[in-house]
Length: 102
Image (cartoon, rainbow, N blue to C red):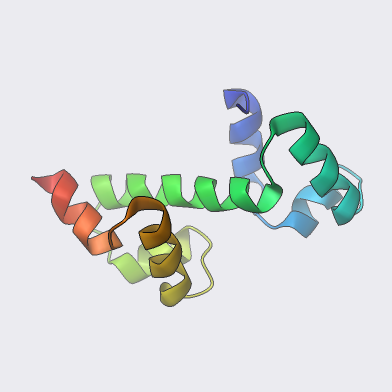
């Protein structure tokens, strides 16, 4: 489990492997290996989970259109967002929003 203060720090950085590695003065390959050794999760999985958590909060707390939520959370496209959201949560972002609003 990643400590909350470190999680917040990492979430504040624009979330790409290259930028995270650069912020720690490591090359991406080394950073990725060390990150997994330290935290037990790959950088890619951490980024995806962080983006999904932010998306869930926005879907729960705002009326922002799903497409804007995807962009706000760093997804390159609405399709990529829907695919990852469905894979991790078993439903579409719209269905999630409707479920939590009940």
